[in-house]
Length: 380
Image 1 (cartoon, rainbow, N blue to C red):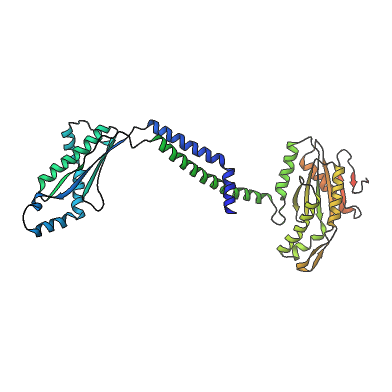
Image 2: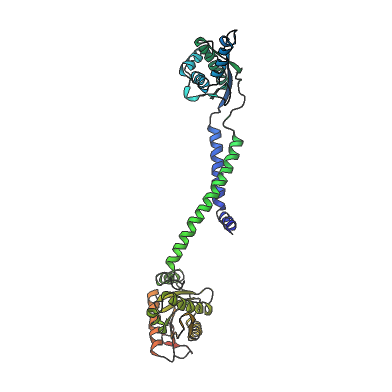
């Protein structure tokens, strides 16, 4: 189920995934186009026992020298010498290079693990200069260390050659990598945006709903009615307020769970009797309101009659050993062009008051075209 959920998130956010991937691809191509190609030349040198150790002499001296050679500090010292400013300046003088753009070149000397081999790499925009400098640095390091002592000798293992291909940029490789990363980032953003959006939608939904019944609350239903009239001022519509006089006492005596179950049963009845495009709201503590789009007052009167008959059946709360008579009354109002939402609500409230004054006729509907109270059986 969780995989299916993530899959649906990716489906809804496909446009974001594609957008991020295309942006990453375009950025990679632009960077590859404007970047200066960089070339890397590498030389290797090896540190060996010097002539002083290999000449005829005391074998113990030779063994001690070889053991000393294995110390990391010896190799590290030669690495530092190779990358020093002194060796760089002497190498540039040896090559006859003036005005060397040091910021454009990267010089790196490292000791290979578990060996006496030193690796020197020079990276920069000029492949010829990179190779010449790598070899010159090695050569000047060899000269400098030989002048210090004859215990160790540093010699070339591999000299640098002029590189033919740049190490960066590599447009095809970089574009493919950027595309993959863009897809991954886009997928992550799509999932994140869905996870952010869903809680926000849930929160907004909760602000619209009544906590006890799950239908629209008074505030949101009022705005919904105003929007309906504003968007379709010449349309046909009816509303109705359904008051349940028989439940008033139970709000104080029943626990909140019991009240929710009672109101939940009422909500189920309303949903069962209404159509799919009709709207239900909690109007007051003991009343509901419904909106019937594309419904005349005459048709609404029949629907309200059916609702009232359904609500006249007592509701059993077995958990509390109670049978609740809802005592429903319905007041309806038909909308016609020229009246506001407040006027329609006022007329509907007046119809509800009329229904409560006449116990024999608990359903009354007000119609603008026929401004008389229309009873549930059609008599006026």
